[in-house]
Structures are given as C-alpha cells and as structure tokens.
Amino acid sequence: MPRTLFALLAPVLTFLVVLAQPLQAQSADDVVWVQIEAQPSLAEATDRARAYSTLLQDVNGFALGSGWYGIAVGPYARDDAEAVLRAYRRDGLVPRDSFVQLSDRFRQQFWPVGANVLSRGVIEPPANLGGTETAQETAPDTATDDTATEQPANLVAEATPPPAPEREPADETPLEAQASERALTSEDRKGLQTALQWAGFYNAAIDGAFGRGTRNSMAAWQEANGYDVTGILTTVQRAALAKQYNAVLDGLGLELVRDESAGIEIIMPTAEVTFAEYEPPFAHYNATGDLGVRVLLISQAGNQDTLSGLYDIMQTLEIVPLNGPRERKSTSFELVGENGSVISQTQVSLQDGQIKGFTLIWPAGDEDRRRRVISEMSKSLVRLPGVLDAAAGADDGQAIDLVAGLQIRKPKISRSGFYVDAAGSVVTTSETVQACSRLTLDEDTEADVIADDTAKGIAILKPRKTLAPLAVARFSTGVPRLQSEVSVAGFSYEGVLSAATLTFGTFADLRGLAGETHLNRLEIKAQSGDAGGPVFDANGNVVGMLLPQPEGDKQLPGDVAFALAGDAITDAAAKAGITLTTSDSGTTMAPRDLTISAQSMTVLVSCWE
Image (tube, rainbow, N blue to C red):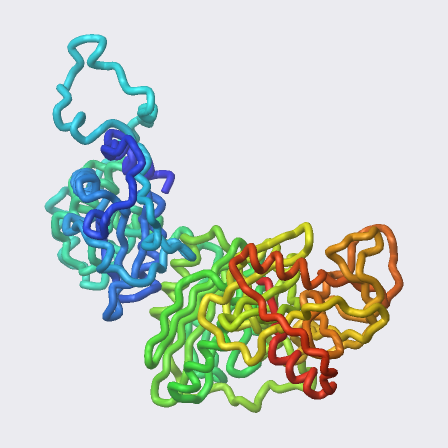
C-alpha cells in the first residue's frame, strides 16, 4: 500500500538474486521453490497470494492435498532459492518458518488465475531487485575511494527516502500500554493482528499471541505512521489502526439484513444493494449504487446431489466468469470467477437438508473493499429456519437462456464442425476460432487449435480429452457433378437445437466467382450457424466444408454459398498430421441414413470470451 510500500521495498532494493543468465531446463530435483505460507481454505489462500503479489515477484499458489493450499515464490535453482529465502527472511518479507520446497509436492495451480507454471520447460530467473546479497554482506559501511561508490549499470536507482514523519506524543507510556493491552479479549488481539496484516505489516498466523513477529509488525506500523517505536500499541494507536482498517468500508452501509423467506441473516452493503425479487433458489439483491454491486442469497432444500447440481449450474451463469479458483467438498463449495470487469465469489454449504449461502458480485480493481465485505458476510451469516419455496416466484415469462432470473453464459460465436478422425479431431471454419479464451465442442469438451489457415478459411481442432465419435467423415475421391444434389449438416441456430439439421441444395460450380480453384459454389439457403459444417454428395461422402458468407460491398443472392473444396481440406489435414478417410462409394444413401450419419459426425463449435 502507498503508505507502507517504501518501508517494505527499501531493504529489497539492496538485494539482487544472483542470476545473470537464463537457466536452462533442469532435473526435477534442481527446480525448487520458497514456500512461504499454507492455508486450510482456497479463499483465504487466494487472498493471501494476491496480497503477497503486491510485494514479491513470482508468487504462485498450489494445492497441497488434504484440503491445504500453499503459497510459494519461484521457481528457482536450489542455490538461488536459498539466497532468496535468506534475503526475504532477513528483510521480514516472509515468515521465519518459510522453507525450500520441491515441485513434486505441489498439485494443481490456483494462483495466478489460469497459470500452469509447473509445466514450464525452461526456468526463468527472477528479475533484478538491486545489489547482490554477497555484496551487501561484505561491503564496508563507508566508501574509502571513488571506485567503492560506483554502482553497476543494471542496478535500480536508489530511491530518495521520504522525509521522516513528525512524531506524535504517546497517549500512554509503554507500561500503561501493556496494562491496557492485557484487558483485550482473544478476539480483540486477533483483530489487531488482522488489521496489521491488512495494512501489510504482519504475515504470520492470526492466533492472538503477541510474540516477536506481532511486536515487530506493531513497531513497523508505528514507524510508518509517525509514532514512537515501542512495539506496544497504545489505546489511541489501536483505535487509529482500527480506523484505517475500517476506512475502506465507509459509505457501503454495512448492515445486518434478515431475510425470513430465504432463512438467512447476513451483513450486506445496503448502500449499494436492495432487495429486488425471489427466483428460487435465489433472493436477488440488485445494485442501487454507483459500484454495480449485486448480492444473491442462495436457499433451497436438498442433499449432496442437489448441492452438486447447484455447483454445476452456477458455473454456467454469466455472473460467474470462467477464470478463478473452484473448491468443492462433500457438504460445501466455493466459486471465484473473475474477468476484467467483475469478481464473483460464491460460498454455499449443506446442513440438515438445507442448502444456503450467498454470491457477491463486485467490480474488478477494488480488491481491498471486496475482500473486507466478503469477510464480513462470511462470518456474519446465520442460518434461520426455512428455505425458499421452489414453487414460489415462478412467472409466466420463460426464457431458455435464463436460470432463476439469471443469464446463462453464452459463447461469443457458435458455428458447426465435423469429426475427421477417430481421435476426435474437428474441421471447422477459421472464423469460429478467432480471439477466443476458450473453445468447446458441444459446449462441454475443451479443444485447442492445431491449424488455422485464415486465407482459405479452415481451422483444425484437437480435443483436450480423448473422444470416440459416433461417425467420422468419409471424403469423396471423385469430383461432384454440376447441378447434382448436395446437402449441408450444421447447427443452423447456433446450438438452440440439440442436433445438427440438414439443408439441401445444388452443386453449382467447381470454382468461386473469381475462378478460385479451392472453392466450390453452391445453390443452397444455409444459415450462419451452418458455416463449418460438412457438405455431402448424394452418396453420403464429404465433398467440402461450408464457408461463412463472404464479407464485402456486393450483396449476393440468398441462395449463393461457397464451400472449401475437399482437396483443400485434405491438404490442410495432412499439414496437421491427420490422415483423412476416403470413399469411392457410388451408392445413393437414403435420406434417413444420411441424416443419422451427418448428425453423428457434426459437432457444435463454440468460441468463448
């Protein structure tokens, strides 16, 4: 934080991790980390990782197993990790019990969101922070000649220290402060540690025990705030610290709200939200202030299966962005979703046949207040008798893309594709795969782009998990006859229907309007969602892939469409290492059989932001 940043970083500016050249890939035993903290909950571990990231470089978070989550910096070579550990301990940036840890002790990464550092083949050195540790340990206190004061060109320029704050007279002597401190309850003492931790001066356990670490953090806070440095907070200083801690909540109107219908009592930011409606299992509290904050109270009867279903449904909602840690246990779950606009956090638990919890939707970039509000809501939630009636609040207005009044997350664009080998590789149009944070097949299987030829408009996808398609495209070895019947299989309405539909038309020309040999012209009234779908001849063989309508100033007749020729698809697949199945069958396929085959090989391809 601004008031403490220089005090924390000044000692760091004297330290340079001793790595001048990038490290090459090393054995697993040589790649290590400095583990600085472990927490028993995903939410708390995420908050601590986020806090450490404001002070340290290369902060990562990993699951440790048995419900624990670790925070570590790295990765480093072992010698460098030990140097980092010594320096960070010395400067009070990490707990004294931090230690060097091996990569194989870590499981799935949860911080930074979306990262997977364990899969890196080359270890990058940490960035220079300012002079080497060895130089600091051996340098004389004062320079004796000009060369002794010269600094290497790559060192960070030494910051000019701010003027020392004017000291305020103490309201109590140290003895009097100790006496007043002894009157504090255990919760009061933990509250002081929490406030010091929030202010960036304390990073050990919140246990209410005022040992050396707590005393040092109190002294650092006193120093930063212009008080006499004693390591013992006086009554006035404790009040000042509490005022700082609670200042971020000013204007939010945190008050206890009792919702009898939902059976929940909880603190809410009442200056930002107000009750709107019940849509079981949610009680909607919509935004009234400028922040755009929203709260959902969650209340329904159920069991573990109901809880699991709710967990799955919540992740389809627009209010729960895709990126963020998730944690599901037998009787509870927690979801954190974040993007550039909002951070959504959901906490739900099952007790005595009742599922209750809440979701807080908060604008991104306001972490101090959001974390404080989440903390207040979590510890204040009281379960009252009763749950929302599943039959209550239902209205006649129904929408396929709404769940209990909430918008289901929808893809940016959905088009068609088709399986071309037994491993589940999919051919689709290049238009579908542009600027996607995530690609899915039939909205549940994630896939990666392995080839993308924008000039010809074709992309090839590989599913992240092994698939067993019901049918695979068989490509014709012959050339379609002009004016012969063709059909296109596709998701004409971009996923509204659960299966592909067939649209029939005529093979009009072997070339495009400008004579392009890789294009075929069709006379067919296809929809935009059909683009990327297979084009069949009357024998059920694939002769091409339907392309999107061309962009430009010319308005073509509605039945003019273009397909990428089969030869162009074969070439693109070969470059991607995929061998296509061919067929020279001359037997006309019955419409029913063609429909079954087409639906079995055609897949909905969705691009998500």
